[in-house]
Image (cartoon, rainbow, N blue to C red; front, side, top):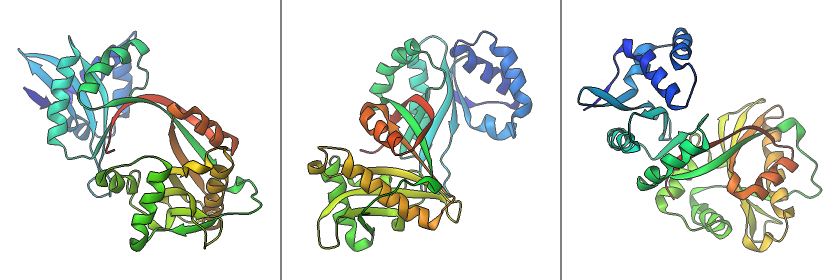
Length: 294
C-alpha cells in the first residue's frame, strides 16, 4: 500500500530520511526542524510511504509541478528505504505515474558516494542518469568589454526551424518533445530572450544563447538555459565568449543591476572554466539523478 502521511508522522518521516543519510542524531534534528515547517498539512500531502506488512519500507517527499507555470519539473527529496532500493523504486514508479510531469530531478545533497553508487543501477533502470551540476551566477553590472559584439536575432515563429538547426548543429539532435521542453525549462518561454548570433546580418549564424526570465526590470533575474557555437567555431573558446558576452550586453541594457544564473554539467569541465573566466561565480555544486526529454 502507498499512502501520504498523517500530520503527526512528519517528524518521524524527516527523522527516517536523515538516518538514511547517516546523520548521527536524526530524531533531534527532525524535532528542531519541525517548528520551521510552514504548513504541515501541505508537507504531509506531498510525502509518500510504501507500507508492507504493516511496516513503512520506503518514503519520498514530492515537490509537485506548479500547474500555473509553463513547466512540469518534478523534484523528489527526502527519500529513503528500509531494506532494499527496490522498495524505493516501487514507491517512485507509482508516484511518477500519478503525478503529471515532463522531467524528474532527485538532488543528492549530503549523500555519500557509496550510497549514490548503491542507488545508481536502480535509477538507471527507471531511465534516470547521474550528473554532477555546478550552479553559477553573474552580475550584469560587470559585463566585460567586447570590441565587436555579434548581431543577435531573437526567436520568432517563422525562425523556429532555423533556431533548432543552429542548436542541433552545435550540440546534438533532439526530439520535438525535448525542443519544446527546452523552451520552458526554468520559466515560461520568453522568445525575445532566445538569440542566435551572427557576425553580420547577411552572414550565417555562428552560435546561440537561450535565456529565460525569472523577473525583468532594472534588477531582473535571468536564467541561461543553453549557449553554444557551431562545430567549426570550437577550435578555441573565443567565439563562445563573444556569443555569451554579446547576449549579456543585451540583457544588461534591459537590466543594468540584474543577474544571470545558470547550471552546467561537470561532464564538460572546460565549459565551466570558460564561464568562470567570464566572471561567473560558482555558488552551488551537487550530484543528482535526472530524467528529462532528450
